[in-house]
Length: 558
Image (cartoon, rainbow, N blue to C red; front, side):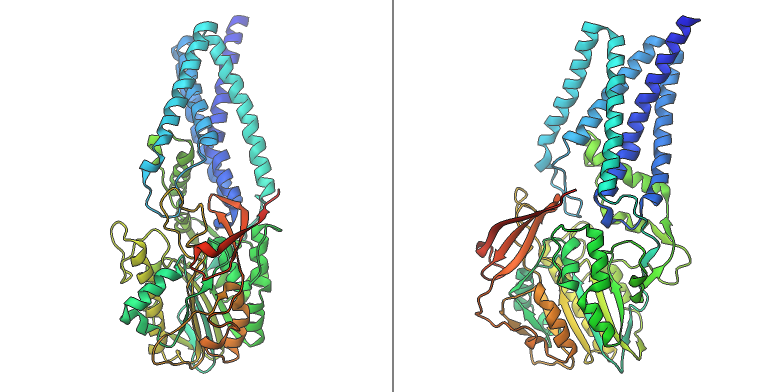
């Protein structure tokens, strides 16, 4: 009796602990880590995600435990073999995901050249070979029972580490935040004032000034669409990515890691001088972007297209597959990683909203072009719109006519597509009779870095020069104006007010060509977004040789 009990008890405990650890690592720990460290990127919160993680965990834990029980029914020796094999797989997966995942492809839609990562195959082979060899040697020297105990203790320690790490990461990133039911919709997307005034900011993501200027100089048809605009060729940006630059464009307020990014975004929407000025002048306001602080704040509903509606996942199965692909990109052996690529915006496609009268807004270029086909509706009051579209952002899935293609084009085609999108919007306003009474600003949040792989995202060059077109009320020219005045995104706040007061696009900045000034740029790597480095541009915005690193840095401190 005692002998049978001693045989069964260790089998059950060891099987349960190893199954729990593997299940938590793959189905709870890593999905929550991805969420906590990118919390501002997702529309959902932990209360939507965690129940799905529990279902994933239950399935993997149950499968592992069932495997061990079936093996034990065949025989104790067979169970030990299965347990050790499972332990090897677990340990290699843990090391692969937590210590060998430091240099992975960026999930931004860029085409991945896997040859640049082939060296990781060697790491995978070395890892698995070493673990298998050490396991075999230990088993040969100390017997299989010792190996079983070894993997039991390893899994117990790892389980504790995973739980503690997950709790700390969650607390440091406000992981229990209830994001509420805020949904950005297309309400009033094709609504403008005919008797009053309109103010439109159209943001074309990742469109670099250097390529846009070359396109304008070479393509008469595209340049003619902007004939009433002033194009500011020497425009200096603020940040290399949308996460911070978009809100700086709206507020002129630098983010220097002195608060949580979600708090910064919330403050911009509630306190930006632009919105206060617009409200004081009786403008209704709409904000079309998914770069939002997804929290419920009554102050957000001054934007007419923001709706308070409950959202959930359209398919838990699709969510599970997406999560497992993202987990696999870190934890899977190298040759399986290429099957695990996923885009973060795929989560947006899983959002469904209860009883929503309007569509959930999407920044996709084709979505924007489709809505331009709608009839314009008119309102009596003044109206403001901020519209964020993907523009020239990767992946390059559109030709210059903004038509979806199979595969990808190149950055020059993407910039031409972005310009034609803006041109189509301008023509829509002209055809609808609201062009003259509308201020139009066409800009980008940042440029683009198409350096070779070894430099990509590891220097600021290219991303510091966004585009900027401006047209005031009733402004007309024979041809598009080009200004080489040294301006910066931080100058936009005063320009907004001047435009509301009736200034032309060519007269909104106090600078002129030839003026010398220093312009600030905070750069960070996309894979290390908690570390900012300050640069000062002393020359033309496109000139990388005159960008000086000051030595000043800003780090997030937990």
